[in-house]
Length: 108
Image (cartoon, rainbow, N blue to C red; front, side, top):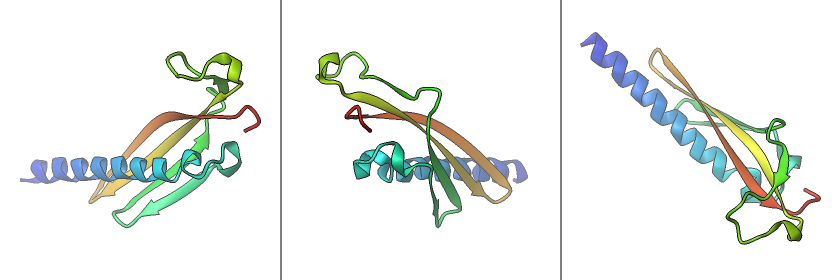
């Protein structure tokens, strides 16, 4: 029973962290139309989760990836971000990390 409770707490923490990522993406610079100006951004959820959005200096600002209807001649860029989410349930803590990018004008 203790093992099952531990597994359940881990699953719940994972689900809460996943929800935090969804909330973070909805609150991301893409949702507001801003690019690098509004990060880092942080938030918390009632379920015991938190998130942080950071501009991804490693990915940075790149050309628009192949496969978009925008071609290189438009000047649009891909702005890369990272979301880190923490979910907590009982004695369990789960951290998830997900990257994403936003397509925008070259001036950010």
